[in-house]
Amino acid sequence: MFQHKHPYQPFIRKDTTKLIVGTLPPPRFTTGNLLEKDVNFCYGSYHNSLWKFIDNIHNLDLRYDNSQEAIDQRKDYLIQHKIGVCDIVDRAEREKIDASDIGMTNIKLRDVIGYLKQYPNIDTLLFTGGNSKNGPEYFFRKHLKNYNLKLKLVSNETPRIHEFELDYHQDQRHSECDSHSECDCHSERSEESPNKRSIKTISLTSSSGAANISISRNPLYKELKAKNSNFNTFDFRVMQYREFF
Image 1 (cartoon, helix red, strand yellow):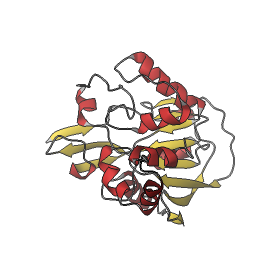
Image 2: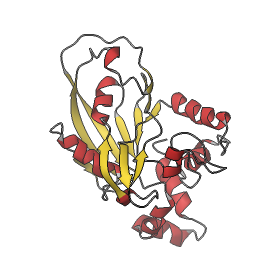
Image 3: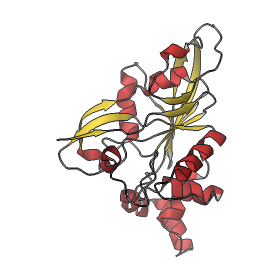
Image 4: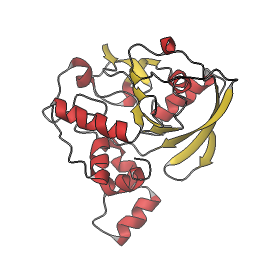
């Protein structure tokens, strides 16, 4: 069995308001055998289009290679827009070495709720996939059960929106932070009574190429495609992601 461990620690800062939540990058990011156009950072696979969507939306002129500059460009964007990354899967096993979510077994999840308690400015989770088996929303629902929490549907349109309420204390101490996370947690926290905050989840259409088939069946996509024959699945996701990135 291939031991598929997430190669990146969560990227979160004290002013982070949105958190991108996926599963695992392809196995080559665990082994370090990157392709020429891969970036050694979250969602750095050249075959995953997340950064291409963001690049298109903001005209960032990003590099797609193994350079440190390519990494720094992505970090700068996340910091500027107060967006963090905390994929929910820490590690899994695979019989077949590929990037499919369905092929993961013996899965260990990260404590995303724990991070939300540490960073009280986060009010939105951006799932890079939905509730299909072993997708980020699917795992997050399982994770919520450990805290006796559940999602409440807000909108069933694509992308689906849910929310949940979280009790948290603002007197978290820095020592409670995950020492392995790439964070900026040196913020002062006041000692107050427990507070309750509402956190929204957005289940975006997956940025992987495997989602193109499901997009082609989407009624809205069909409608837009009928109006403009040049409209494609990339355009559809850019249109969807623009509101949240």
